Length: 55
Image 1 (cartoon, one colour):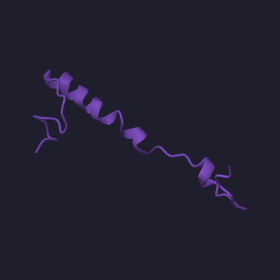
Image 2 (cartoon, helix red, strand yellow; image 1 turned 90 degrees about the vertical axis):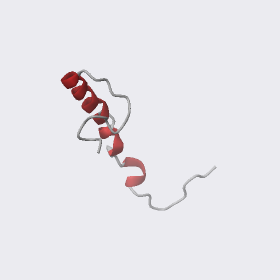
Image 3 (cartoon, helix red, strand yellow; image 1 turned 45 degrees about the horizontal axis):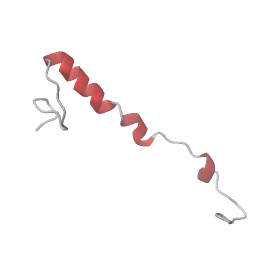
Image 4 (cartoon, rainbow, N blue to C red; image 1 turned 120 degrees about the horizontal axis):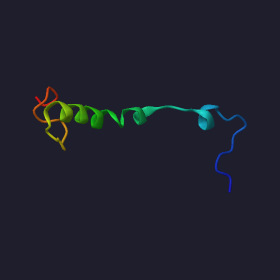
């Protein structure tokens, strides 16, 4: 089976690297943890209630 047939393959097709949303995975838990350490309220929903993020 031939999946890709081309005389010239782009470098991006096989060598592209990116961080995308991988770098944002820990942001929400880190912010929630900081607020929990500040006021001892464990929040489980986004946007975080009783914070500047909840309008």
